[in-house]
Image (cartoon, rainbow, N blue to C red; front, side, top):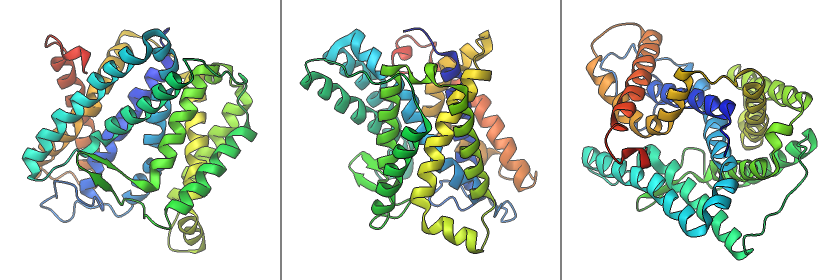
Length: 336
């Protein structure tokens, strides 16, 4: 399959955002983050806006990009090869990280690799559907429009709103090594499905500039709306209907970002190709590196924001370099 440089570049940027998100957890309300600064002044009360906005879309965008490449991958490989390669690529890194995190924490923990198990599940469901259909495919219109995206966001939003009446955001269900967050899981499944349909029907390439601009503007406006929340009526409104609010944010911003990178981010220099090759492995290894680096520089005073930026930048560089070194080991490239 011909490489889509703009999707590779978007995935690299998204991976860096994930690193910054995890690096920032120690300096805000990070919940169960494994590191806590010894200096209580290293705290940024505003950073919850950053966490909330990221969580509204960035994993959904990962699932959409992943789903985009699934149809043609299955076409080339068939059921058995497709599933076996996905198992190697997704389940082996998850197993390794689960062993490491469990050994360090003392309890069974798969950490951020929940994404890998869920992606494998989605790929398995897709493959079973294709197998049941005797490998027939269903082609739709090559045009993606605002009406369709609005309908998808509405269905996602209403479903997410209903789910959150029973399961609050950030509540996780653990089934052995498999864990998932019900509040966001409908979003993830639907974004993966959007990616699959986009890959099959060439939606991203055929998307008009008008649709791209409108979705990007709406997505950015909703991000700003989330950032300016305080304690007033607007914050109360967004909080009350957040399952719907973030669904529109997710769908519109994700499609808008794809258009933005297709239009202005389709570069393919040696450096960006190198980054793209490491991006998947970076997602796997970055979490432990962040915690190590945070502990090493715990006593260094840079101010809360300065420490956040420093840790994010150093963890990003370290994660890309470590992945590059690991991929030099024979056989590792099949997994990372």
